[in-house]
Image (cartoon, rainbow, N blue to C red; front, side, top):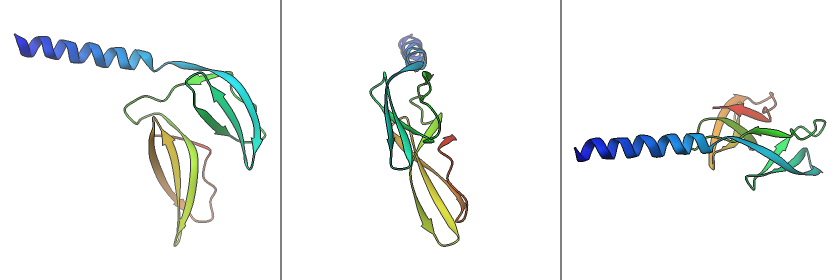
Length: 109
């Protein structure tokens, strides 16, 4: 019986966390800095976008399981490939592309 109650509590807490990851609203367009437009959102995070694009008024907050849309953080060249680094739900994730290609600003994981 205790195992069933713990399982139910775990499922409910997981459901609550998934429900909490919802749309976030634009607080401020911080303008273009360097090669990116910086946009501050209601979750307290500043996301970077293409400088020719306006900040989206709202967007889906990344999920806590490391899946979702990553926001470009940086890159490094490694021989004939390039490592593109993204921030997803507080974690760094990466993809490897051709050294001559450009890292996408956003990447789904």
